[in-house]
Length: 192
Image (cartoon, rainbow, N blue to C red):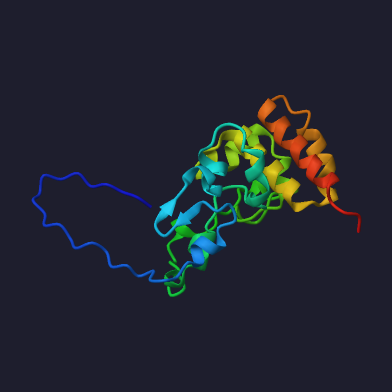
């Protein structure tokens, strides 16, 4: 997280942070969209977090397959960083998966990683109620459905076809475009 403190207090500047990465390139090697282009250099326009959270329009077709099943954000670079392995998990409730309101219990016992078929079936009012205090509201309902469609297409699971066909007739052209793309991904799946 980035933060700023505004103060009139005279402060002495700290020394620059030491380079702890050395020759490690795990984050660069693990990034599925090649958004980490060099040490300490990020092409944010290629980042999964940008595509699934900040981008308001269509996700470029060439980037959609690398998004995988990510519906909101990505922490792959953080997951592979050896400096994060020793981090101690906090017990603070603000950092725990949120419990789903009882009326939404069909979604998942928590808001952590609910099934794609449940997410695809959320109506806008459910989305607003369920995620009212969550950053998941950032991409808005249409961006959320766009992301769900991409994740279902990348899964290549035939069980998502009826849901994607429903999304392909959605009133929003952004949702329709991504659902149609996802249906094409299912059609490219070799028969089992």
